[in-house]
Length: 119
Image (cartoon, rainbow, N blue to C red; front, side, top):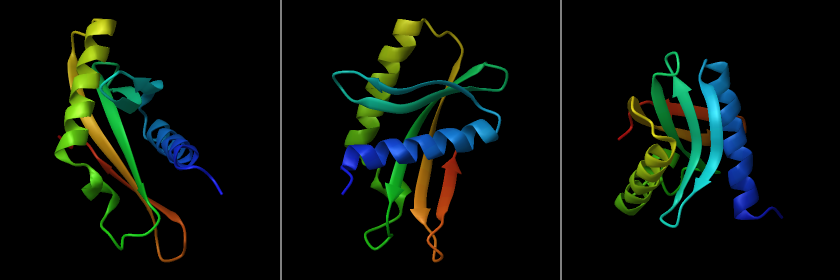
């Protein structure tokens, strides 16, 4: 049986491939700080917007949609960690926060929801 973290990496990789197909430019994955982690970092629109992406997965939606699992505490961790990244990289242009939600459809296929400017 796969560990939760291994499953997370698989779905982050799926989200990464999805965003690359949509024309985003990949920067890095799993940026860790003592406050939290940023799953994926991309740039969009000719490298003028830095995009922090949170990836959420649900095997089933019995207890809610993937996108509904982001609470205030998680938002705070993402915001603080992204500010550290921005400062370290000396990013001076626009920033955006996106969320990718992945769940299984009735056929067992992955369904991806991408929300730009999620917060």
